[in-house]
Each structure stands twice: as C-alpha cells, then as structure tokens.
Image 1 (spheres, rainbow, N blue to C red):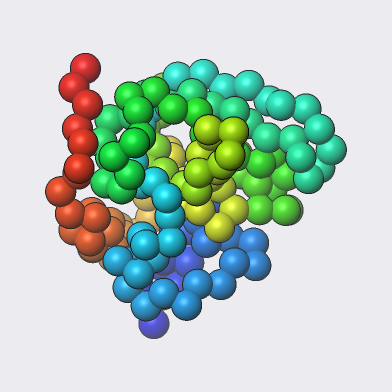
Image 2: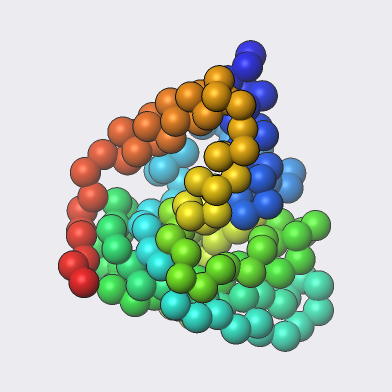
Length: 162
C-alpha cells in the first residue's frame, strides 16, 4: 500500500508527466507498459520553442540530444519531441534546457515524438532534487522503484558517445 501511495506521489511531482490525466493502463508489468510506446530513450534538452495554437493544439517542440535508446533503432542522435502545453488536457511542463529526461514516446507522421500526458516524460535531474526532500523511508522506496524501472528496461540498444 505504501509503495502505491509513494509511486502516485512521485509520479505527481511537477516535472513528471506520467500516466496522468485520465489515462488508465491495464498493463501489469513494466515490460507490458514499455510495449505500448514507439520509442524509449534518455536525452538532454538542448532547446525548446512553443508552437502557438489554442488550448488543444499548442505544444513545446524540444530538441533532445539522445544518449541511450532502449526501443526503436531508428531514433537518431538528435530528435524533436512534442509536449502539449495545456496541463489540464494531458500536457506537461516546458522541458528544462540542459536537464536529462527519460522519454517514452509515440511517433508522429511529422517525424516528431509525442510525450507528456499518457506517455512518461520524466525530468531525471529535477526528480532527483525533489526526491531529496522526501523522508528517508520514502527515498528508499523511490530508489527501489527506480531500480525496478531501469532493470526492466535492460541493456540499451544504442548508446551514443559524446
């Protein structure tokens, strides 16, 4: 029970947009969850711009320098991700330039990867800062959850060197 409450808390932290909105997953394991995405990778946000539109069409277009790829061998060294700006409609926060992200994304016809909302888009640097304010028991629980996620991902398909 504590684990469920902690995971819910961690996933609700401001820089995390994971399984949010009204998204309901029937996946029972991390591996089942991973199958739902077109691409899974880590990367550093290089720059971002806001594409104007109304509440349902405005998004952040962020260039990511990809570091490791776990799913989709077609992911290039540099990709663009699209995150909707309207948080109440499954959007997310503007990506912090220079921070590392774990990205679970769907491909779009225009060559971008969609994140946020029902896709996991985790600011790893910001999350570590926020986890630092948790109790020691909650920190240990988060470390266990994080280790499970990395273990379930396994060895990356591609590692880009600097």
